[in-house]
Length: 340
Image (cartoon, rainbow, N blue to C red; front, side, top):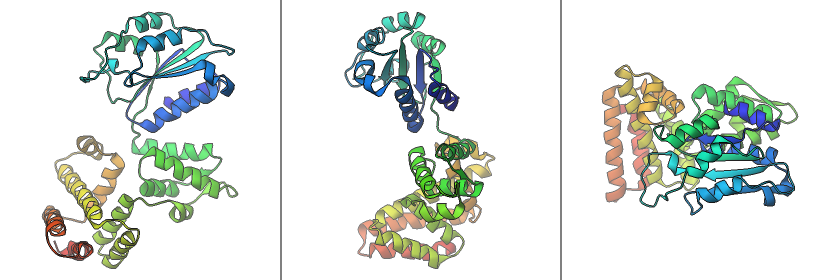
């Protein structure tokens, strides 16, 4: 839905009022950029674009007065209203009280020369409030939600297409595996790969493997993958590479603990009949992470995972309180991982 609206905006077909809400900051940012690029000319910005933040001292009254002002030397005005907390049920002591009466009147008859955009980076709005109901009815509503696995795959292909290249299915899976599900990071990687693939117009698996940056989280995931498959030498080499990159052993241990905790939770919930989507919702993690953790969970019994968690807790204690070499503590853990 949100991509469809981007297409309409690029074709100069605008709604008088938009409500953009959800927990995916990249989609919110992209929506703002599309509107800024296509609704008013660059030379009109100083006159016909305004941005208000209702959590930073601006008032709704100011924004509504601006929305009703005729554009100067241009066809239309663009007004952003960030953080409209009055649409939520959240209670904050510092939360300013905003007079919504002018907005209610405006929504009955929006100015034909203004694009008014409410930017609400919230997971939920308070549907019980009259102003929320009225705004959702009057506005074009764009939900900026965290994408599901299949949606991310589609998004990666579309992003590559916008950059003038194609990307095969194996390359899509690999770039998501390496860069994760953060759309800001993914977009950067796709743009970089598209430049590299400019002549061939095709992003391949080999290109992704060669060029995509590994985060420390991804390196730790690969380290676990090697250890799970009893490739201890490879796991240790990855660990030593992280140390050469000046990564702290304590941080590496914390990431190992977090990943094995997820594996344990996924296995436990899976044994109770939960599907991967249900597990993701229960644990509040992306379904793609659950899918990868489920693969690793198959390699261990419940007793083994319990032993690994105890071993990690012991390693943490040794790192913080004993005289043992911190780097050696993780090496010992990795060499014993299959014997837990």
